[in-house]
Length: 180
Image: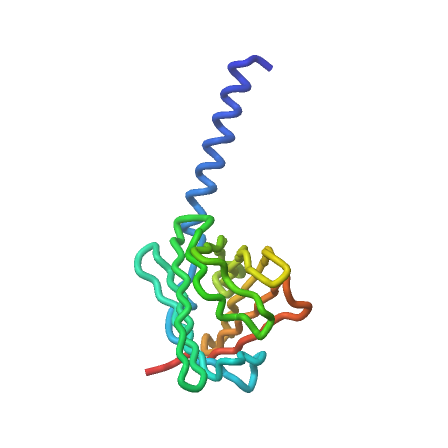
């Protein structure tokens, strides 16, 4: 094979790779997830120290925003995950790690997390793969979280399952769609 033929094949490969990367933005179908979702405490893994949670998934153009507003006693905290759906990888501020379940792990100052988002099963599943670093008494710890957002067939139930590298069991949170 000549150098010209190899160069031609290499350029075809890069065109195909660029096309596949651009098609990612069009393959992320989030329409079924948009809306407000109320936490169902009875069907979910304990959310302590929080007793209530409102999950809002909104989209404005290429920006998908997942917001959890957690409440417990007089405390309220809002966790916002902004995602640019045209990007295969998003690097977002980590902020306070609100999923700290009494384990002594905290977000480092000015930390970021890397999130990869995709939809599966004809838009019925939204999967976030998150990599972050937490600080513990023993030092820094890399954490991987796979979050699967799954819509029920009738669209009224959202089940969020987190598989965390720090836990042997999944964390399952069930939400019901808030209707006007």
